[in-house]
Image (cartoon, rainbow, N blue to C red; front, side, top):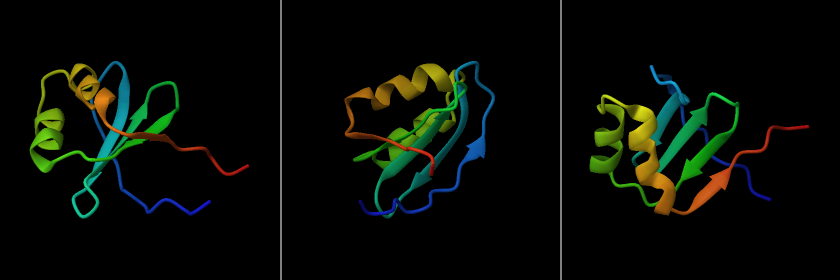
Length: 77
């Protein structure tokens, strides 16, 4: 299995989301949830990510990513 490229994430104020990040080169968003799970969402255009990070409710805005191809990150054992 290939290693996922690093996408730095920034802490956000949200009841459901801990941090978010974005890689414009691959159009991939990275979202870390309060429960500890981290997901990557492909095919996210820059405008969509911008609307998420500037939303008054980031947790609700992240739901826009549900239709995107998703990969759950699994921590190294």
